[in-house]
Image 1 (tube, rainbow, N blue to C red):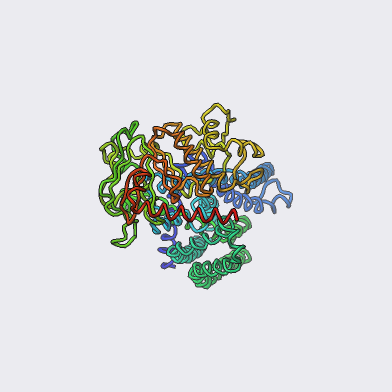
Image 2: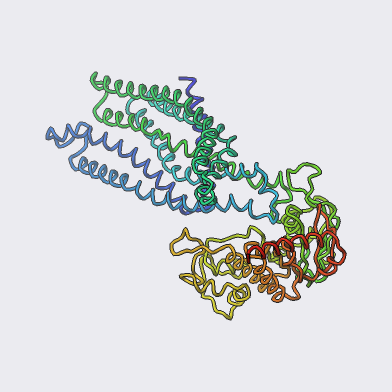
Length: 637
């Protein structure tokens, strides 16, 4: 008995602290909903205990009424008995109604919390202007822990929190009834064994959480494999006959990730079964003791009718499911609060605003952008594995600069450095003589309109897919206004050559560009690249001063790409532009062409100048031209 008291206090302390932590968080998110939900939960438990007490009083008063007396053995009048009975019925109706109301408020609270958690998980990941932290596996593990083992675990825990609060109050109130009507030692023992079950269950869950905590990387692999089969590569999987391989790989990865969790769960099942036996035996013995006292005439009917339901209520107040959900929610809430701190500690340069300079960007660049002795290697790469090494490059304001080189030369990496999503390992980048680190990075990035190789294909309307090039002009989410040929969207659509494409869509500009949605359609690779070009041109129309085309039309044939780039150069005359392509014929009309090789600029000049020098550019251009000529002859044959 003495050993159970500290255990009970420990369980109560942990439960109370955890519950208050969750309540505090919920109160920050939705004050009214939180107070209403908890108020209903408390009222439900209080009414439940009161109903147990009133049932005992009514049952104890029945013999006197049945005997035809004007008053019961307790001295209650017939009118008093009727009032007592009516009160019991009112409490019963109220207590039966509250759970339905509580469920409504629970769902409202849970939905509000889910939205908030989504923001809290995504914000520290997306708020930084750079992306180093997104490539840190530990950051990915931390965000999975913040969401929890079963999705947004904090939301799930808050959904069951009212049940846990209600069950705890019911336990305490019912134990008090047992003590007052029968025996305080019995009441304490019953409460103790119930808390013992809670402690045992909490211990099992903690072991399970500890097992799961270190396996988030393996679980991310299983989710990746699932998405691969369902979203990313269904056609390739079938063409190459990889369906069974993927299923088997997913099964193996999932089993490897979950075996430690299941082992911890199995070990806990044995102890939980023992605790359940003790819990059941204690309550059976308590009921037997009440019955024996009643048969011996030592316990009046009123007390018997109150004590027995109260004993059963103590036993049934254990809510293992709610306790487990709340415990998991506590763990996820801790991870949720630690996520921004982890990113700030391990990636201090990534903290939102921490690296943004005070210098306003204005209409930069007015003169030029310079890469000065820039070297760069990706986070986690070995020493000496620089993608760029001592690179010097000048991009003059208003010129169209082309960058060419073999695959893997670092062309796309240079674009990432220009946009500021990565910082140079050494050297610096200046804009009109100002170090890029000293500029307001957010505003600088809004000055850049880019089409990268893996541009986004938003599952949104055609309108949204264009106007998201300048999100400040996109309007409210989900609002796709009509497009007039004379407005900005209509103009850039015509310039990018997608007007006819949109005209063929079922709902025109309001058609969702994703065939998995009702009424949605998908576009060809070339059509998508024209949409991406329109998106970039819309950003230019909204004020972007630097346009980057990284393989702007790789899905088109060489003639179509050349025509597209030629039209682009005409449309953006006077704009600072960087064009990247592995097709040399496409960039021949650029003002200047730079050849990137071994992480450095090895040649620079106009197309004619580079051909006349007979260097690297001339060799690659001639080789590629010969291949296209052979392919064209074979095609005609």
